[in-house]
Image (cartoon, rainbow, N blue to C red):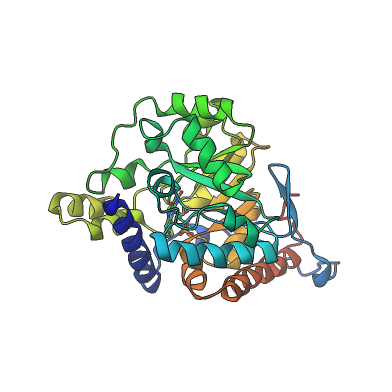
Length: 331
Ligand SMILES: Cc1cc2nc3c(=O)[nH]c(=O)nc-3n(C[C@H](O)[C@H](O)[C@H](O)COP(=O)(O)O)c2cc1C
């Protein structure tokens, strides 16, 4: 357990350091929105509200799942939930593994709901942990802990394989996803952590009962880099470098999944840097846009910093909508 906690603390430092580097290509530069010189509407009338999995949101944004070690996580989660409440956006908490397996709940308890009684809030658990650590009772407990509106299961085989003592036995996980989806009365959302979800994987997950996909594609926070920076194992370090650019870029994953599943609730996350990337992701067919790493600094600072961050994102999405005349938010 101490190892897991330390890993979460390291993640924060390493992701913050990554934010200072030149960002990797995220694929959105190749997507062009056509300019419309005759909008015939009023910029301030443009609404970005939307509906996701039956829930109303004021803006089409999701604060993507993040953990950060017990003390930090609590403050980060308070800032994020308060901001989500103010903005009317959705939020996923970070992995609840530690909160379920130890006495330290990392701020992931019903108190969190007091900061954000009305938001659409998602639980989070790793697919790899479904094999042995968690059954339906633990999952129900994770959901009740924060009165979640849905359960996010993250699929991160490469991240697990690149870390010391990661979970690399992924046999029968799909069966477990199917069991869990059939037992729960709230929707299950499947996401990656920055390597993307292919149409083939999406199809298998949907057939297993998953209600929504968050592609969490390549181009933003790289856990391959993070894990290879953490390990002292030189072979893992070399593998981390080799697989540094591995994965499906977010725009590619969104386009592929949307063309095969026109009605699927779909989230674009992974490498969304600013409002123009967000606007492009929505134009390509995403229902929501998620961010994790780019919000981390604001989340550590204050609730207001998180609010400002997403208001800036919204202003650019609204402007892109005005200057394209296209419905880029699907309600
Ligand atoms: C500090 C940090 C911790 C994270 N912890 C989790 C986690 O516990 N569960 C999860 O599903 N994803 C986790 N992620 C992955 C993000 O949810 C997201 O999929 C990924 O960072 C790509 O998005 P980005 O490029 O906007 O950062 C974490 C990301 C960061 C930055």
